[in-house]
Image (tube, rainbow, N blue to C red):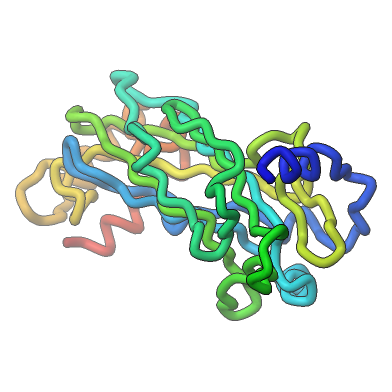
Length: 253
């Protein structure tokens, strides 16, 4: 049964794509852009496939997805190159309640810096399985792929950048249920940061005195102009760090 499913996945080609999905409206998303954690702490990262606008309606019309593939890859960590880790297969809790192929994930690579998996509904059983349609919020429909538990390093200030994308662009792994549209190439990737903070509940408190004051702001500016204020953990220090810090600063503790 497993080999039959594998042959189906490999044999489904992009020629089956009917053109109904717009790439900008179909994307992988995480529930946060940045996760602030204590040294050695964990971040529970919820990863979804988001279908927006007309694509959300089309997904419902398809009665969901036949299968979906995903990868999470750590692409950088600074300043000490000690990234947060997805340490084991047990740290990836895939949504097998909805994608309930009897074998679990069809393919998985449970290691850091990259974790990849393909989830499959069970087309060979007689359980009336129609895939997963997801939760509708306003005009967006979110399909939960899984929850991934990252363990941070012990180094305060360490920021890791993780990219969420397709399992393999050469493999047809994200497929709609009824018409078997292959939408791998339509799925936009995303990224999130994991930052080790002495006070993760109040990340703008840079001097750790229990409150957010003008001194914290000046400390951030000094690091920003020195190029060492990667506040959101995403890539290098840039204007997005400035805006993210301002948001945290005005939020306070």
